[in-house]
Amino acid sequence: MRVTLTEDLDALADEWRVLFERDPLAAPFLSVEWLTVWQRHFGADGVPWLLAIRDGERLAGLALFHLGHRRSLRFLTGLGVGFGDYWDVVAAPEDRPEVLAALATELRRRSGEWDALVIDKLPEDSPLVPALRRAGLRSLPATRWPSPRIVLPDSFDAYLEGLSKNRRYRIRRNLKVLDGGELSVRELTDPVAVTASLERWQALRVQWWEKRERQMMGEHGSERFLAFTQEVVLALIPSGRAAIWEVSSGDRLVGVTVNFMDGRTFYYWLWGFDAEFEQLRPGHILIAHAIRWSIETGRRYFDFMIGDEPYKYDYAPEDRAILSMTFGNRRPRSRAALGASQAKHLLSATRSRISSSERQIASRGRA
Image: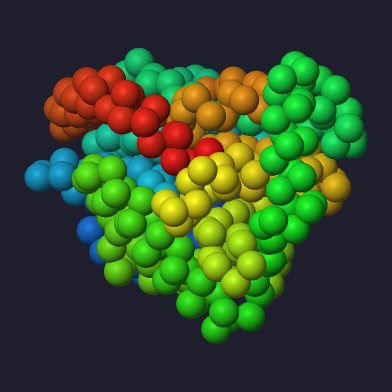
């Protein structure tokens, strides 16, 4: 296999779409639509660095990187990592071993063009890490983040039977609120309605945090993040990879959820609920609805995304890990970059421990 480098996302778009459809593990966050929009809104501090792995003329694999600078050091990171919880190389299953071997060899060959390779949001079972190590790239110890998901059975009744009696009762009680008409859920597809709903969604999220006097919204409360979400959702709705659900009580809006999905997995991404309706526990109601909907539409997984918030474990998910780790090469600049990256990871881990209690408080509002 041969590997070529390009900075032009549009040049690969058509082949990328075909390859994306052939990879059952590729989450929506690796799609042309997601990453093109991300680059336009958030990628100005670097350039796309796309390694296309070809078998003859056929695109067999695609490694989607972003090359940026921190002071004088050059960092390769996953393109779009940040708002999408998962990143990996895109490849069809039968091609993946050869694709990863060719990619790792090429990264080593191009070691004069980068100083640190930050692999973030990588599923623990990805074979990318061993492929990089076999190629002789050095790595720092991995940081592991919990990312619980439910393995869905063939029927909702079978799912309920696998829960404790108390959990089963609570889910049925929550669904009665929907089935009895006290709350209703509708999916939006009209572009004008979606755009307006997402404005309400962000306003509800800001309101929820302000009520708790917490400054944790960061970029999520910005006009740029709203514009990104509106654009990416509208780009993915036609392919069935995004869904906007509005929850109402009569003519009152209770909340809005932004969900992503593929043929195997429902991704419970971000929500916004009116704090006045907190006593109804709209988060739990929507999760129960989404799990049932995911089973009925043939999904295999319900993914809570990264984070160990307590409310997620009311639904008996399996725990799995998402990795963040940094690779380097044998050059002196790379050794300096690895040292800087190690210090950053230690600071991040400290901040994570400090904020764990805040996440637990926040989880009560999600549920």
